[in-house]
Image (cartoon, rainbow, N blue to C red; front, side, top):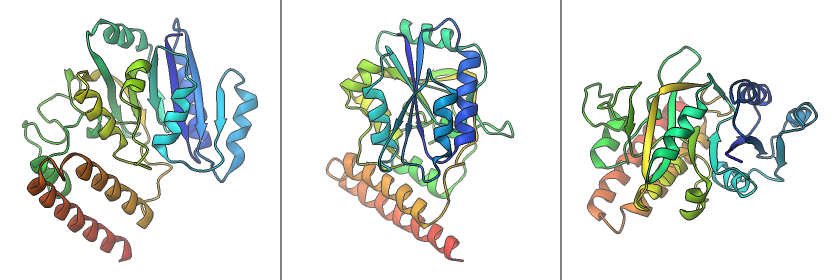
Length: 277
């Protein structure tokens, strides 16, 4: 089998079905499978899809393990040479996957690949291509909106329709060989949600592989349909960023870690006040 789609689902049954239908519509001539891992959604209506799509493998978890662990569970049962981590609130938009797989096969040290993403309004989602968080670009991400052509956090030096090497793509659509995923240990399960894609992409790079942004083709990402922007969201988001900088900067670059940590705490304070007000 060439390709395994891994979809971690939580509480977006209709979007999940649209995602499955888009795969079935556009993935042709490729030996593939679809694996859906439900993270213990409170609403059980998603189970109606089990009878509708008998060729899809559904895994129902007994508790919400978070994005990282649920994907690791899904990948562990995958049979494909490649695994494609895909959000349930996305849709494939064309017959382009054979070209993408051919591109990946042609790379000597292929790590991971992410496609261009746009939202329901057609607007480009800049998190499709990113840099590793560091002092300057983290400040830019948290406190400014740079729009020049420099190598910013969102890699403004790379065009949205380009094909180029990048450090980080999003976990909403992330293609890699299963063997590479297993070699680097998959997603770090310290992360419940957010930050795990940055960590995985960075780990892949640290193991000598190359990551790519493939802007020639796009997927639709409704973005955040299953995410409530509340206190829990803030704790998870800023908690994930804190895990990352502790893991890679606290001992290696203590002064940089101190500044980044203070910046995160200040931004967290600002966003928490907005919610309270």
